[in-house]
Amino acid sequence: MRLRVRYFASVREFTGLREEEVDVPDGATAEALKRSVLNRYSSLRGQEMLVAVNGAFAEPQRTLKPGDEVALFPPVSGG
Amino acid sequence: MIRVTRDDFSVDEEIRRIVRPSVGGVATFVGTVRDESEAGRVTRMEIEVYPEMAERQLEAIRGEAIEKFGVEDVLVVHRYGDLNVGDNIVLVAVAAGHRAEAFDACRYVVDELKKRVPIWKREHTPAGGRWVEAGRPD
Image 1 (spheres, rainbow over the protein chains, first blue to last red):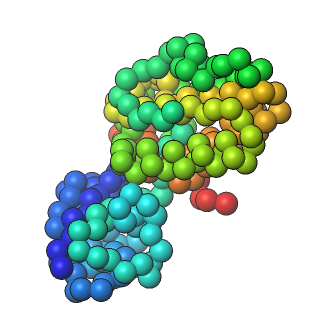
Image 2 (cartoon, rainbow over the protein chains, first blue to last red; image 1 turned 60 degrees about the vertical axis):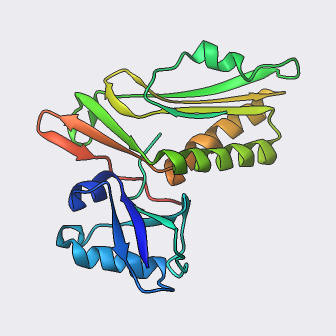
């Protein structure tokens, strides 16, 4: 399945993209998608990345479904 | 009452939105752009946000604060975009019957915001830009 993946802050800079579509096997987990993105962009290696699914933080074992919006970003620093 | 916006805010105007007859006090926290950090002299700041998620997370924190501390209302305005030294970044205002719960809830909202709302700061110094490293969640 193809999922929309959004990137923010340093992750956006390392990928050079605000968003893209990523192919993952049906039933893939949030962790599997993160690994797939890490493999695609060598510049991301060693970066700490958090995963959100549909606007909420996701556990690594969260199963992704068609239509999910995934976001990858570094630890937050607002306030 | 949650807002993520490029625009500046007026603390007075915002407070009027949450004061009502049952309120005996309002505690506020205003975060502003400081002119220095561990990286040196800061000349300006960029703030990036994942708006849909930030609003959702802030609504959740607001609800927790109201329930946990029994306060009357909580308002958060967080800015993004290009800011200069001295500019407002964030306002947290808590209206409550009494001061103790207003202070406690205000601190809770600021602390939780820093841990789990998807907003990132990039400081610019004479040496260049750098993403502010997150405080680790505790």
